[in-house]
Length: 332
Image 1 (cartoon, helix red, strand yellow):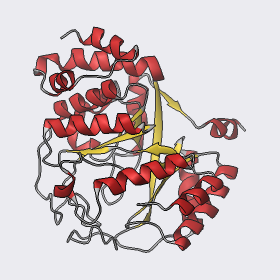
Image 2 (cartoon, rainbow, N blue to C red):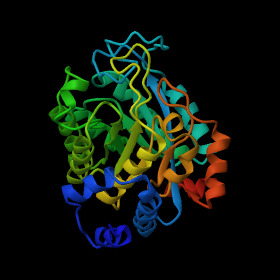
Image 3 (cartoon, one colour):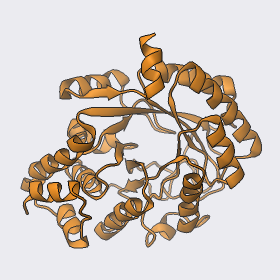
């Protein structure tokens, strides 16, 4: 396969066929670097060498009625995690200040649960209004299944983006969770799009899915027109349904990132949860396909030390991309 030629076809508007996508996922390992080079051609066309940084604040931990098999916060999990109700506006603001000081462009307010309460949304709305004024950060909400009225309120407050991952393919969904449907997830993404909020939806790789499932997720996200696509690599947690699952290696993770770049060429592809334990020493290579990473800790698992992330970007010769208003506030 001439990967460079295929990359140019993708830049010119081609959508991969199923056969081409399968060819990517099943390449011989001696083709990995040529494939990654071609993925970088696409990434560079749309993003140059810029990298978007994201940071999570876990606004509510545990107490979730859902049964997602990957999640330590689910109702079925026995993992020993810290549990607490929705935090205050002041605590969210403290997190936003840290994000601003560390050149994080997107601040993600994440909460466990099926969906937010009216009180939860009020706290987020008040915090976001102040964040936009003081720090100019791009704000992403991730609060679960979302009603129209709450989407409208979040948009009015200044929420730029809303994350609700598909996680896996429609075929594989019921193996991962039974307390909500794949259609529920699609509906939430469509709701935020309807209210003018940028849709963020991604996947978790390594949950006993097939290669066809991976292709189906990538294509579903293309057809959903998700602006930002976080790719998580399963970090199996003891006490969850997927405890002990270990299907990934760093080379396959790079192949998956390349597939998502070929399938969603112009979109923000973010290396998310599990990158440290799955990509390991090959983490820098991931940014030749992706153009975004999380910095700091995740929800109930630790991330890499921040100084290592910044050093990695410096060594790659990549440039941190700030939010537009944030640029002016940093200079001032």
